[in-house]
Image 1 (cartoon, rainbow, N blue to C red):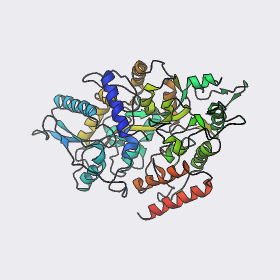
Image 2: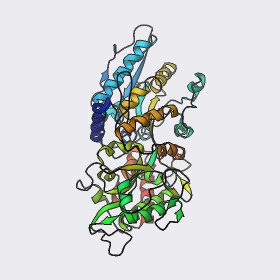
Image 3: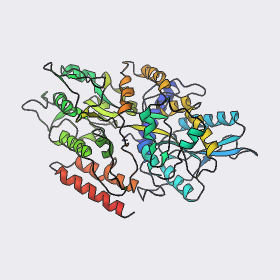
Image 4: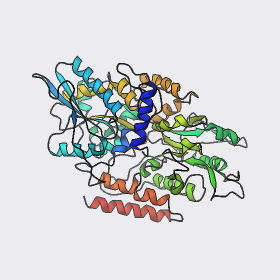
Length: 510
């Protein structure tokens, strides 16, 4: 999402320094042989990779591809009688030096324990990884395995991924240890293109001190629970409820809150609610899963729940004043750390679990509550990273064996290096125990586990034509993402039609 590559690298360094640790969302350190998690995290491979060029995604962004620089482990080619499998990194994560060290050790362990398959690891710096991969694929020299890669990053290479379903069946690979919703996320028009590895459910982070100061009850921690209002009434935990509470938690320099007469909206010092605003699709998904792509695969549409979510956000900034406007959000004086919740100036922040990477310095006590509902339905936008096999691999069986190794025996070390929450249910408690070493207030991690079952389907990062070019309108820093948080008084219905029309014009060129 918005977390920068620099931020991610800093988070990784901090994690590794603290406990041989990781880098992406929450945390879990990687060590040579064992991973004992500890520390906050940073950003998953998903969004960081989604601005890349690809064979079918259309031109996008600025190309700055450094040369592909394979890292040979135990020899860059297979010995006689061995099948060589190439593992390609790094479309959005995994290229920090500390992560590469872990990845190299994983490859070394595999090669030492397998005599018929030899893995070669290719680490290409993030800035040029997408262009380099697109070039390899176009030249017929693509790798076998790619990752870690998020949903958005992978969709920049839509149509290039192998359907794993036959191999899963052939090898009797057990998917029962993964949450069904996480497995479903990878079941696309291309087939079962992935197996869950690292997941980042959505939660509602909240600042306990700010709630206590306002005399408010905290958000519910269990889906289905009611919220107790200041007057003692119990109400559903909806976005309307959040707005009411957020007004009380939004305070101006004179101590007036946004629900009181005399509130000065031009001098706010504390905000009540911040939605996940980096991608308009993700923000829309909190009000209901959907897609910009119509049923025919080529007609642009704006789902009604997304229109409602975007209108809610727009009013939150310009009418209700519970959320930061764009200029305030990007101000280093107000928000110097990527997300304003990290500064203690925001009471509630809806975001993915990976955003714990910036909470280590938050002085106030924080916790996690459930995502609100819209029209009686909860949708918790979902991020995830995994490894994928390219469909043009000449060795699908051997590639699958390596893939399952990365998802299995190597998972503790790799999850530690990437800082990811394990998708395997059996591994999650150990991961959360490790998080408690860093976050000594022991937040309610079960809130994140509950959120998995409400993952948006289809995922908000699902494929769309001209993927990267379309992100120029709706992605982080995109035209409409920027416009709506910087211009007041817009007719949002007209904006929605304008956006749909511009998307359609891009797709019609394909």
